[in-house]
Image 1 (cartoon, helix red, strand yellow):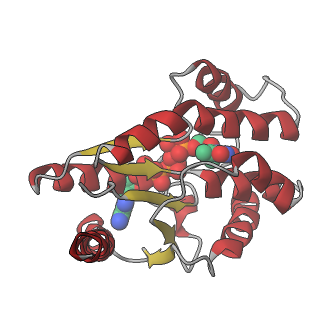
Image 2: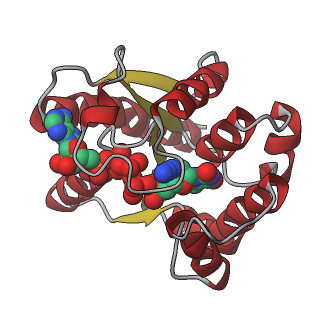
Length: 209
Ligand code: Z5A
């Protein structure tokens, strides 16, 4: 049995990550692929509940360092579950991951490498699909402005930090400007298929030895 595919969908606020991760899960299901969706922050865990309060209640103060470490600890709460799912051959779709953690905190002024270090050792995605607007149209999307970080100028800084990952071997940018939900879904599916095929071929080579 091959290890499952780990796919992370990343991007700025309101770029359509939740819409697309849900659609991807449905499509995987229909195609007979056993898949699980995990959204970060996972707000129902003990640490996730603190993060939820932090994000939704502007009177709840945390230092930037504390907030950062909580987001990372929230991923570590789920790390074993992710690893077990993958080892059981299941595909895992992540709505935000390490990259959001580093991009949002370093955009506040924390050192990039410091931000990355608590996440070292977490399962590495086979592919990260970075949902990107060439122009900052996410600020016009429904719901923008409801949470702590949804301020246009801050979003620009987050984008700059996200782009520091763009030369990583698992990074792929999906441009979403003027594309319908269905069109973006097709681009994501095509990328998933490339990775899934690569995994199958790697397994075939291995079994031929
Ligand atoms: N954060 C952090 O600081 N550190 C970390 O480690 C992590 C996160 C993991 C909450 O995250 C905050 O936590 C976030 C980063 C920080 N910053 N803030 N604020 P979250 O993921 O829980 O945030 P969210 O509010 O659930 O998601 P989101 O990013 O704001 O939205 P989205 O998932 O990208 O978009 P969506 O909900 O799918 O779509 C937004 C709207 O656009 C909706 O009305 C859709 O119907 C519409 N939409 C979607 N696609 C399209 C297309 N193609 N065309 C037109 N309209 C569309």
